[in-house]
Length: 255
Image (tube, rainbow, N blue to C red; front, side, top):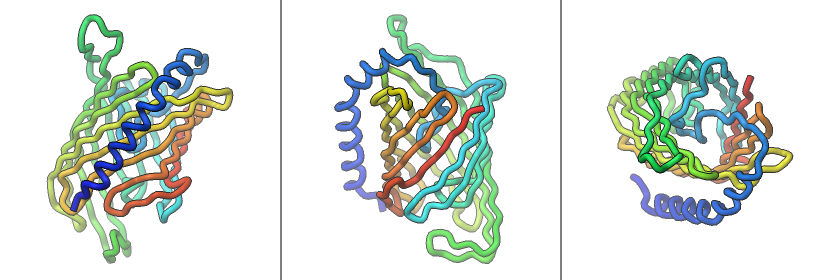
């Protein structure tokens, strides 16, 4: 059952967070002379832009509160980006995902800000022996997921804002259903220093999947230099809530 308490608390926290830091973030952003290559994703949500041909990065993640380790590869291709993620749990899904860049959209002639958006398609197949998922033991588990949707992102001053609607079909031992997800993300640069750019972000992902709560995420990103990015995500509220530090830690290294 979805909990209104978690929804209200998380959205209120994000609103206060963004409103309190936007002015200082804008000032720091104007003074920045650094160049950073952040991944084309938030914490869990994909952004609307793609990295482009010749850009590649690898990712590793680990964390407290019983989170497992895993990793991925992000490869820039002509007008697209291929993402390969490996893992078995909720936070390190096994999947191949392709983002295809669509023409930029400009809301009106006066604005300098454009909306970058991409079509998204993904597939994952998991087959494993003797595993426990959500306190249920499986001698052999099979699960196939197909994902179709899009992501749109706009940058305004020091803020980045993303929306991503998805339609997901899942078939296997865990579930057989088709459901929709709608994700929102807001990320704001707080301060740019000699040690890198520090940002804060909030994500909300609303789902129609049975027996699954909406997910709310609060975390930070440290863009250490032009090659290294570190996400620290201490709050994820969903079916199995956790609040810990450092929580889920994701390292992205650009080649």
